Image (cartoon, rainbow, N blue to C red; front, side):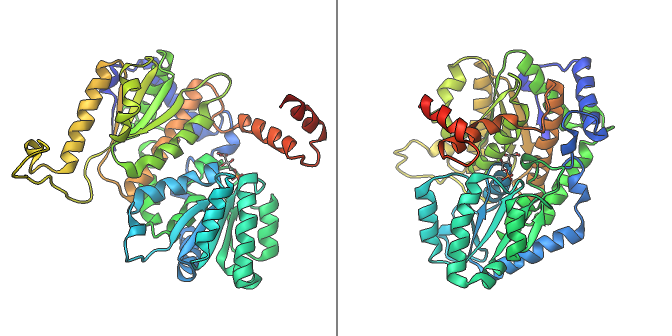
Length: 440
Ligand code: PA5
């Protein structure tokens, strides 16, 4: 991975370099804010062969029995698996005849009646299983989806077989899901206490659904291990891409750049953007502070958001994940009539045109006052994606500490839950119910 911030025009001061290194050291010493949730820092290198084998064994069983596995979770219990799955699998796999891997779909990340209806209707045509993921074991959205999907699996296969088709990923000891999984005899994986949801993609939260989908989770973890090594305490600032990225974004923020747009010219990385938005939004957006994380998928969004980025309010900077080489080769062919006027591109690979778009956009945006950070990965594969995930996690921890917040809590997400429970007349919310209904 290469990180290039030349197009931000910034020079990183000695003071900021020292701050970034100190923040990194704090993550490793465990003496900073939110230090109950630092299990992710050394997570990649701590994953044992036995743990991976256990994940692969349960995944193999689901792969054998099911051609559709419904993965239920929200937030950090959803976005990591979704992001890597979209990055690693053929976007048109469902249209292709040869299906060696089960299809993994997601539920519990919304409360849409039409979404769950449609999914359950489709599930009737398949041999199904489910992975239910919730660290707290009490989150409403996945709990609703799981109640419905569990009932459908039990109705179809009976309770005993359902226990062969449902796997739970949850807290070691607490929460309704843990109790339920124990009572029903589901195979269960533990989300470590000291790893928060948005940092949990390299635990069974991400690894199990990915292994079911046929993703090489060992290579994913190996890529993360390499990045853990490259960003560990004691690495010089100039050699540590996570420290550099964290420093640059904090300098840009101090300079009035309040919005960071993450983008890529590969649509398969769209959900990496979504995962990243949660990671940075929940980690830094508190105490009236924090860069607002936004995203674009290019070149599509140049035809929607491009105008704003080029000429709108100058509070933006961009971070582009640039992929050096595609997996496949497609060339623009010459056309005798040349009615579309494209013969000047004849013989060029699509990736070459995409690269010129990227370079052209970069300069246009920089000229328009949008500083640009470029993260280049050699190609999209498990190892580079594993490295990228850990890079963003490490940079997020460093960046949050530079900003001065606790990057590992999310007190703000409770507000909507209280209102929703009050509106739904949950027992215990009687006073809040009256008060909120009066406000409607
Ligand atoms: O990052 C977080 O902690 C949150 O986004 C959680 O992952 C999300 O709220 C889901 O929580 P749980 O896994 O407890 O159901």
